[in-house]
Image: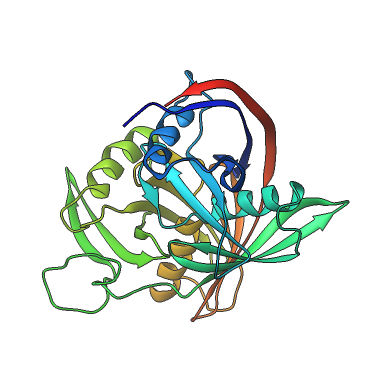
Length: 293
C-alpha cells in the first residue's frame, strides 16, 4: 500500500478521568480505511508523538446523529469506550458538529445515548445510557468448564494466586475480581496481563480489580485490553457495579461512586440498564504540519 501524506491534520486531545484520546473529524479528513489502524499506532505513541490511550474518528451515520470509531493505541478497533464517548460528545458539541443536549451515537456496540451537562456553552460532564449488560457466557465471550449461562464468581488460577471473577460485557468483555486489598502497579501488570490473554477469553478481556468501601462506594483499578494499566475505564466501572450487584454487594437503582485512579464516576444499575455519569476535559487542540503513514 502506498504511503499517505497528511498535511496540517487538526485534532483534539481530551480525557475522561485520565483516560485520554485523540479525536479527528474524519468527515473532513476521510482517512483511508487501510490507514486508520496505522495512524492510531503512530499518533498514540507516547514520547515520540502526541501520546494517548486511543484514537477516535468522527464519522457520518445513517442510523444515529453521528458515528464514533475508536482504535486502541496498538491499532486494534474497540467496540466502544464510555470515557471515549464522553470525550467524543464534548468534541462534537464544542466544535459545532452536533449541538444537541442529547446525542445518539453509533458505535460497534450499537447506538448509545449521551446527555450533556452544559454550562456557559461548555460541556462539563456527560451521562451515558450504557444499555443492557451482556451476561451470557457465549455472547461475552467467556469459556467455562461447566455448561452454565452466566459466569459468576468463577475461580481462575493465575500464576501464584487463585482469583474469583465475574464476566460481564458492556459491548466489550470484562473480568471483574473483588479483592480485600487493592493491587499495586506491579501486581496489576503481572496478573492483569495474564488474565487479559487467558484461554478462557477468546477475544481477550479487560480486567477490573475492585475493593468495596461501602454499599455505595468502591475502588476500581483497571488493566485494559490492548492498552495496559489506565487511569480509568468507564465500561470497566459499569461492569464492576453490575458484577457487584449480581453478587449482592451493591443494590439496584442506587448510584455507586466508583473511585478510579483518574477520578470518580457515578454508576447506577437498574437491574436492566446501566447509567454512567462523569466529567470530561479538553486538554488542547493541535495541528500536525506533515505526517506520512
